[in-house]
Image (cartoon, rainbow, N blue to C red; front, side):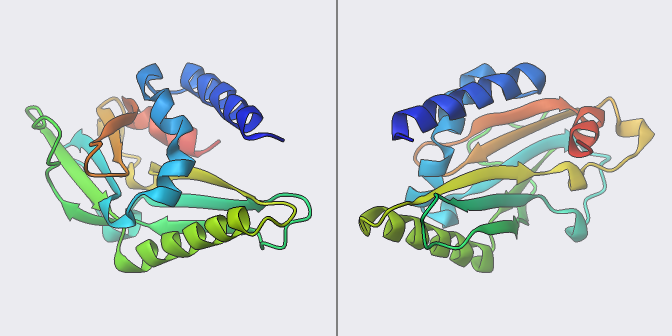
Length: 190
């Protein structure tokens, strides 16, 4: 399958997801480029900013995660991998985004050193598979798991939840998802 076909398939999948979820259409170009961003940008710049109701109780065990799924092409010697890289709460503000409104709070998560090293290993595997000229290659699926952070508190179910993602400081944040806490919990169950 050519790169163009993969991009078209990814775009169609993103359009479908955007129609069914809280993904803004203006974010689709960045989502289509997310695989390239993961293998090109500095993982130390990676950040997830979430704006929530300030009554949300945040625990370290409920941190969001960066999901990387390495799928080798047929005939590739690269092993498959399914990684869940935990993010670490680094700030309760989000530089580069507007201030949180009344009763709201920004939570900014970054990749800890161990997770950054795993991203760099995936990047090296990707680059080696591309440059080796051998038959096959790999595809990297990227996702963000944040449903574990949303507490099933009925009082917060209808409060707004906004997620913004940054893969490189110079490009800043783009809106990843918005909806209610209840929406996020329901999507995490599917």
